[in-house]
Length: 281
Image (cartoon, rainbow, N blue to C red):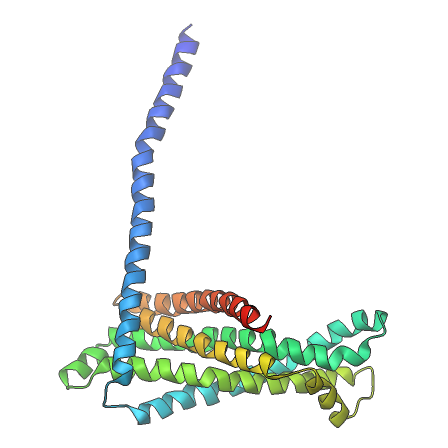
């Protein structure tokens, strides 16, 4: 009897403890949702300020050219190497399947359309999200830690226009250029992959690759890269500009910039595919 009573008491105590934890869990989840929507509202305000400062003079052309050089030219080697390997591997992996159906002649067209429509823009955007996004987030966070942004305000310079607008605009302009470069290098890698087990003339390969491609493949893919670059630039600058002070905030800004920018690339890509299918089909 005493054992049964003690078990009931222990079970009752556990139930009471579980009910005591429920308000804490509910409050924790409420705080998560609250911080998410507050962060979303702040990001919307940040985007609105960017659009306002974008059209308002004076314009920082020199800083824009500098950031375009750092974002575009400094990323060419990584984008080129990735694109060449991507085209090479995709060709080698696709060839046996097409050979089973006797459709090896379709390989150049299939690879080129796949790269230009989807693989090239998305891979280039992810590379920029990792390299450029983390660099911008860490750079702006360190500028805030060392009070360089405050010094700009004291000296009469508009730090938002000089630091934020130029980087976002440079990312938006350079990503389509990097995507075109990646597409060309990927097709060269595909040409090398075709010639590993065959002998295809350079002129013949690109004639076959471009024969099945039209403007409905090229234009939508370039348009969505503009939105990729805009999203990467806005997220990276927002996280860096609003980071917490301290060295810990620098790493957190770089990390969250990469994660959120990469996630946003996939979200924009899903929307772009749906919109493109509505207009083309």
